[in-house]
Image (cartoon, rainbow, N blue to C red; front, top):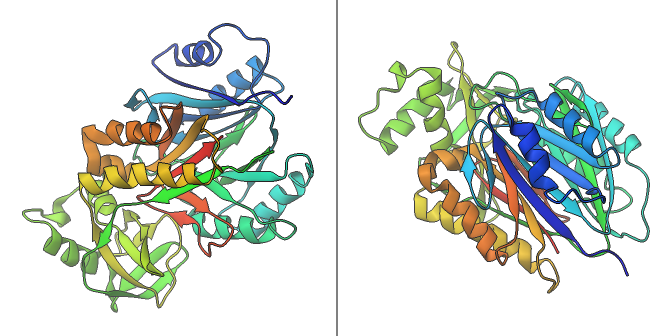
Length: 392
């Protein structure tokens, strides 16, 4: 009989965080190693040191990770910490890392595909966990390339997140094994005998008038409606808020407004959220992924009730895809934007996810962008969204 699935989570902070993380993941000193560990570390830690320590403790385990902007388990949400999600059971795992994501995203994804080509016929269901350097601005491209180039023989389902750096917006890291890199992308395939569940919801609604992207390059929007993007964004957000002098705000003070009043693109009957990351001196705005010229966006709003409901909804959606099997646990990618809306109720959203899955272990990190792409989806990079990967 195949071994049953077991999932453990951990959350640690302070000088002994890595040691504490190891003891939480293996409290009884079990001899059997997990098949995979996903770890997420605040920028106050060296992601490479965290990865290397876990890999040294479990040499046969696939260890992947990203820098983060907030860490959580079902029991607690915090910052300047390390969170981890470990899975035991009848799975096969492959993982690889590729560099030069900003300048050559297609080549990076091709390198991943070449490293992850081994088939596992006895484990016909697979899900890809994609982690990438946010500052590359290639979130959408990397996701679509992975689905297209790696899904030629069998459709690819993807979840994941864009790495964070505690809202510094300067350097983000991803890694596998004992190695962490900037300007890189990590992909891990988890192969199982039964289907995995993916849920994705955001809780935002479009509020501003339609705005046309009239000049853009890569992930930088220079003009909206033929004017500097910053000028138009500021005017529209002033109409959605009150008493804020946006020109007087520092970059750190401005970031929460970028995240709570993001751009949205129409996607069928729904919307997809796109959050600005930075304002530049020339009036342009950088995003986590590209917005093409000709796109029409509207700025969004949301509230606490909508954010909590969407977190629970994402978990329920993921559970429905498990084919009636009970969940064993869930890996969650949740946007830092949502933390800025929920504030001290962000932990309630994570608790709602766990409850919707029957009280199972849950862990993850607060991202600069979320990845969720199912077989029939045309686009898989999100902002201000909850993504849930449920394992039966």
